[in-house]
Amino acid sequence: MTGFVTPTPGARRSVVVTGVAKSGQLGDFVARAFAARGDHVSIVARSQEAAEERAAQMRTDGLDVHPFACDLANPDATAHLATLVRASAGRVDVLINLAGGFAMSGPVAESDPVAWTQQLSLNLGTAYATTRAFLPALRESRGSIVFVASAAAMPGARVENTAAYAIAKSGVLTLMRAVAQEEQACGVRANAIAPGSIRTHHNVAAMPDGTKFVEPEAVADAMRFLCSPAAAQVTGQVIELTG
Image (tube, rainbow, N blue to C red; front, top):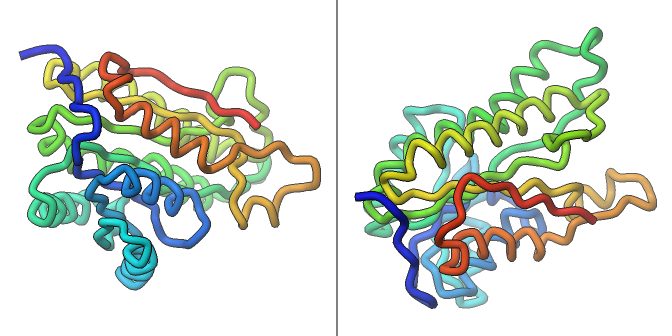
């Protein structure tokens, strides 16, 4: 069977959001946005303590959020995570691959190979392992995946001193396109967003005055659109968000 299934407007879904560890960071906004819609949201952090703290805080606001911990760069760990989430939620309709992180790698000639490997693992390795683990469940539900790339991965971007991060995020876009093409016959959609600097507490403190930020609410809105009935025929696409 080919083609996509149009989600029922307002239907309650099982949504997995990775990279939800700290209050006020992007994962917090995204998880809350889906949960506020009425979805059953499974949040994933590296530590159980962090995941439980975020979930508890969201539950005080009446949101249906469930915590999980996982090393998302480890394929065995992500396979176990997928089993746990399916057992808890019964199904998986949406996967938001939000886990990642930014670090300067410096000029290529002077860069630290360890830092390069860490950036590739943190941004691309996590997206690959998590997607691979959840694809069987997403095939069953004919669900949707959203990847998080970066403006640094878009054509013409300035990438001096940040090549490791930019290459990892470019790899995320290639992974997204591969999944979109490979899984279309199974009804699974894959898309990505590519934001500039997002207005979070950490970024505001780290970025120079005058930086144009992308609002986290705009990122969450773009993700919800890509998983909505309005985007039922959209796959293999990138939405670039600029400040």
